[in-house]
Image 1 (spheres, chains in turn red, purple):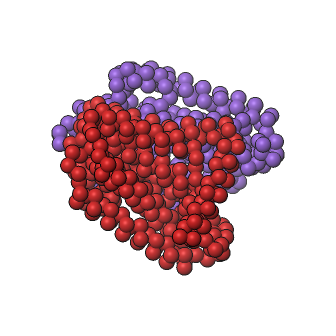
Image 2 (image 1 turned 180 degrees about the horizontal axis):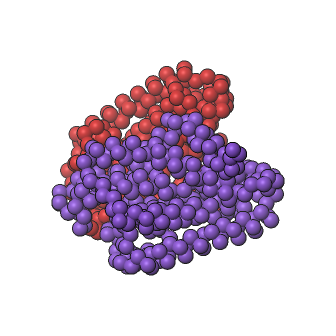
Image 3 (image 1 turned 120 degrees about the vertical axis):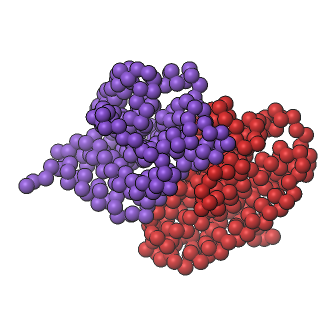
Length: 264
Length: 259
């Protein structure tokens, strides 16, 4: 319990520092908010234009809106909490300044992950919740407490699994040197999360292993909200796989640290 | 024989890009992801025709768009922004070398290296999907002219955006606006046939249709003369803005950077 308290207080200190730094340049902060909303608009218009002409799997327009809201929540939680830390991590590994994280009496994964947020993404994240609310409202569904609880659990697990995936591919930097572009690859991979699982019916077999996990990150939380019958089996399988993946990446991180030398 | 200074710069840039080959490969891979995801979604639909396009046409559209996007997308705004913010521009003010040409050579070398890395992946996907790629040799000359205009237009737009760093500390937001507008309005995410009619008509007068895959669907508006006029007009506007922004920005610039 003492350890949790310690980490929580470190997180709050970094949180406040980053927030005050971000809003000290007001024009830049405002521009960054516009920048983050650009991707919100892009994803919305793609889905909107697409749904005007074709239908995707068994998903109606309002169900796709709920999925899109979940996609915003997933993406912008990652951007809000971890993204800047990831970018700094790649640079630190290259320059050798990653040493500072190793000599501190705090877990290195915690330090590189949770200490560099991007607060301009907070508004897009809130917008994501609003989109989910209106999607569910238009579907005229009564949401039970069980649905809300399991939706929260599955969303948190989705965020952590997505975070673990990005961290996993960043660890390639330990082994293969400077790979700044992996962050863009991770960002592009999120495109799979914008569509439901049953949209990928004609995907080449070798890509299914890649597309299905990403799509599941938004499909499962959305299904929990919109399906009249609670998807117990899917929820349990999804939760177990997410936890296993998060633990696997933790192990990979610890092993990767052994490949790190001070010279990058 | 003495080499031209820009030729030397081109060779140096190519060598620089080739140092991190894995990084280059990942860049190429990332730029294929968005169009390919959309391709898989649309080709997986049960109907034979999707919004008037058959599956082969869709596959061909997205594959060629992927490779053109890789080649046509200029990222020079990041380089220009960093050069201004970090004070590197000062080097070019005291040397007999023009910063516009330096940036242009950097952009050209980067895009050709990316194309060289992207072509094998493109060829592999063409082989996997077994779709015919039709090169109409009768319009080859006009396609080359279109590619040149699109290439220059993408560069001049991106260069103008980078020059904003003379006045604004953080250009990141505007860079996102550019990226998103190109992906959505240049037909990378969706072919124009998916857009509402009114938007298709308005887009003819914007620079977006001419930035990436214009050579692929020349005559999309039904009036190729209008398309050429608009593309050249936008190119002239952005080249002029490059000149004016540089001229005014450099007066504001101090050797320590803008701030």
